[in-house]
Image (cartoon, rainbow, N blue to C red; front, side):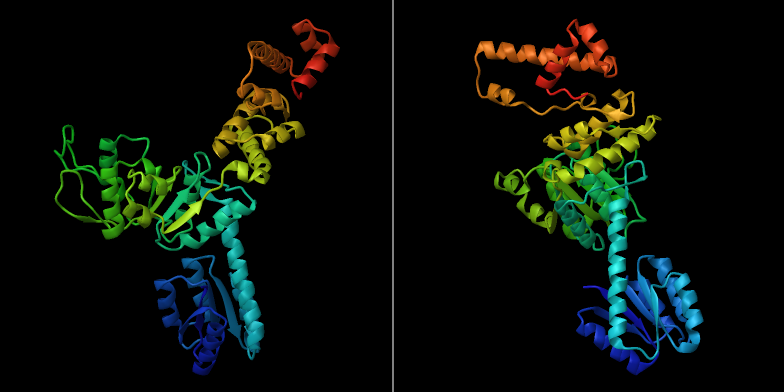
Length: 453
């Protein structure tokens, strides 16, 4: 439910507006003067503020300034008498969405309110789609306009503003940490630490120390007190990636953090309160892990309050082209190479491929292609992927020795032709000379082996 703060010193006007917007399904709070308004906006966030321009103690411009200082995305509509239109225009220059002159038609104001809230939603969506903090603390784009991607983005927008634990589900390489960072940077905790830890990458003994810290002398080699990730993330967000691989004994400690917001360092007896928002991710089915008694059911239900599925790349093929173009631009800039473009043939190959490694595999494939490409056009030969032929699929199902030999010979010929084409930068005449075959035979083999160059 979207929230509106109404700032109006006229009691009857304030009550009328509150009733109008409550009837339309909005959450409404009111303030009878500027001081009350400042107190309200400092204690919580509003989607929209409607303020009279002239109040008994402050004016609407001061309210506008305070709102924008706290949250630039909160929209503000100012109400003014005819004689103050010039001031209202000045308020718009300082960030107000619009102004209405008194007396006004409540229906007209309602139309403006809906426009303002729609504008706020679009700004939020564009921010998430455009910017998310990456590991080097630079903003990168979340790219995707497919329905499944839009659904995932919409869920992230809805959960970001709360402290609800989010569970990101998806295959390896789909970008779960990217989405976790997006949740953090759209949340009220965005100015506090964001700490990510991969539960599958650290041995159990070390992981417990990493998460909860330890007291001096807690174990051999513990010469000083060590703060764990939960303490270091105080006031911010901790992202537990691949939580399905977490040791069962550590799962109980994570459950305590979720339930009681408390931890104890290794070797310590003091209970430490922590204020941390938790986001978890898994590439395995945690429900099945619970059934197999490999994951605690009580922890699963705590984590899965708000599950978000990140779709694999094969389920959003319309996003492959913009993703590939984004990576080409990025790697050309990083490698200080002239900007390249993807040929239609290469793009067709990218869109046909099944991408078992998802976006991470696409990123690596494009990086390699940019390195290999000496010209301005990325060709299929620069890509380290190939669509299995019908013959290869049949071969997997069972084949005789003769067929296996023929297939091996074809693979060897194809690999050699591709390599020589790369060496000659696509010069087919020179390629045929190096391979000691005539020009027509080269074309026939390129067509048979589906080599585009």
